[in-house]
Structure formats: structure tokens, C-alpha cells
Length: 138
Ligand SMILES: [Fe+2]
Ligand SMILES: [Fe+2]
Image (cartoon, rainbow, N blue to C red; front, side, top):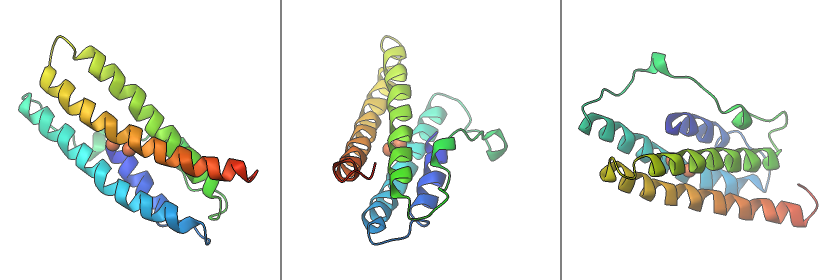
């Protein structure tokens, strides 16, 4: 999930056109680094738990909402896609936090910290969306 988000945010930090795209581009460039850090933390935790980090052939893409829009000036599409990705991550991590509650407090602690990052990402993009909604553009 984190790796797919890196791919999607990378594409969406390059594709957008227009004067209003710059804020989104800069914000997603930053997020690419953070999501990469999350992927690394999950990988390292898998190893600490005696697992093996899967190879690329086991990768399955799921983020249909973050595919490039028809028009590269369609910033609302990107904003909504990011909100959807962050919401999916938030829901997934809340499930892991609950599941690990009486089993693995180290993983739980790590995921709680990552969850906060995702909540911050979503909040930022919800703010971007509000601006478009206020102008009747979303
Ligand atoms: Fe993440
Ligand atoms: Fe995120």
C-alpha cells in the first residue's frame, strides 16, 4: 500500500499543469519521501519479526482512484484521489492497531506513529478541497 502510494504520488507530483497545481506538486513531492519512509519501516518490522520482505512480482496495484486524470489541469481529481488513498490507509492502520492490541505492542506503536502522518496528509488535502468547494469548483 505504501509503495503504491509512492508510485501514485510520484506521478501526481509530476503530471499536473496550471498555476494552481504548484502547491499540490510540492506537497506530493514531500509526501513521496514520507510514504517511502513508511514502506521502509514496515519492511524493517517484517524482518524483525523473522519475515521476508516480498519481491516486486508479488505486488498488486489497487489505487484506481489515483490514476492520471483526462486533463492534467484537473487538480480536484488529484486532491480527491489523495484523500481516498489516505482514508484507505487510515482505515487499514486502525485495523492493525486494534488487531495488535494484546499481541504486538511494538508494531502497534510504529503503526500509531504512521497513522498520525496519514491523518496529517489527509487533513492537508481536505483543506485544499475546501478551497475548491468554496469556489464551486468541486
Ligand atoms: Fe504512508
Ligand atoms: Fe500518507
